[in-house]
Length: 517
Image (spheres, one colour):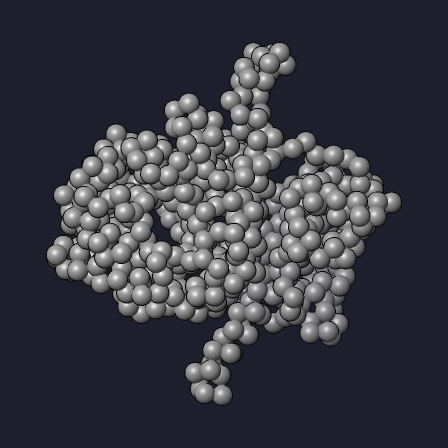
């Protein structure tokens, strides 16, 4: 049995499918590269057969990742397994993850089948996947509500068929730690060929037990945890990677094992996923919440001043949370900007230094002094801009006076052509600006979500606007950043519109392909 727990991250599969708006291929690749730096052993990055977009993103990630194993999900269906292989075959190392439901409820109500048939289909799927790779994972969906005899039976059959990892998921978050731990204990002791495979756990958080169940499973012999950054995922979410990793690290006395995760990357990856996925982190979230290392009580503060260990069982630095330095001004050169980005864990390939430096100078002229979090926010926005953005913001001027309609002048550049208009009315300057942008583009868009957050502190903090818009039955996420709220709002809408334009381009290419053009 391995002395390390394998961290299987499914942020880009189970986590992504629960988002309000799908991520672009570029955004998924950005997260995948961050997960690679974090040190995850396996990253599950999609369900290739589900759509051409998912296939493309899995293939793109598989082509770029070198230090983690890339996995794709498939049902126990031939076409799913074949699609997974076609998407993954370009990877340095990959895994095909196939699954089928095993609980009586799922077998009878969903599959309209029998358990005997399910076992046969599982064996067939594993064997087919083994034709493509010697790294095959099998999951018995809804194992948490499957009788232990049937779990042992299907796990034994899957291992005999060639599965090298067997996953016992609590798919609906039904189990309590004692019964889930006992289930893993039974599998470890009753399945005769269990020594030929790694036992994995995939827990959902419907009853708030995901982390506890996963850790109890490890204490009973499981050696792979399937989890997501910030615990995002279906319904109440999945086991949070940062929670299980830091629990194992902090309580080495109990576990006696470790992970390969570079914990100092946790905070940065957590923030990246939160922003890209438009899923804010609750302040009291364990490990990565804003309040995780904050102390309000006078007694606590007194204790912290005397000895940090009085009220902190881990240091903020252990997850990469560092105090920001204030030593960047308009006089700072490219080397200083590049150096600060490197200190925060970014490599040169993560951003365009020329674009970042240009944005930095504009911000420095406005603020005077620029913090690391400002620089990171600018880089984040730069990373979101596609190489083929059709629409760009050129000029904007909005005015609002009490008891008078708001007015906004907007000048855009669409496919290299300058367009401008003035919009009057609406519910304020942001609404007037949005009306102007939509008038220039001619798109029919419905705003379903608007959120403004401050990036930094004080009156000169950057304002980040996150929006979700609906267009032709699909949702698109946009994000904008500026010291001016109206400008950041405009940039968020333009970001979403460029995503819409890219979706139109993909649709046109599909139509031409279908027509044989």
